[in-house]
Image 1 (cartoon, rainbow, N blue to C red):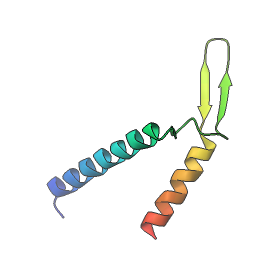
Image 2 (image 1 turned 135 degrees about the vertical axis):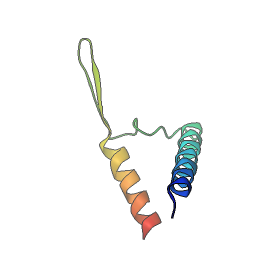
Image 3 (image 1 turned 180 degrees about the vertical axis):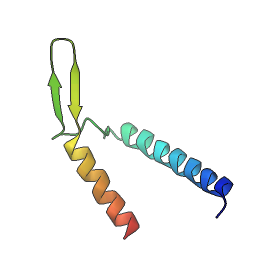
Amino acid sequence: MSLGRLLILAGVALIAGGVIVLLLERAHLPLGRLPGDLIWRGKNTTVYFPIVTCLLLSLLGTLILW
């Protein structure tokens, strides 16, 4: 496979991922802010630990690649 085709496929995959994220946000399922994701708010900082989001994306990726 040539480099040009690989870059086109990567671009299409990124666009598809963006569309999926937008659709999930409209369905009130915002990635990174799911129940179970940890949020630490300091005086001047906010840190997100998206544990449940990572598990969900890992499961989805495993099912797609399987």
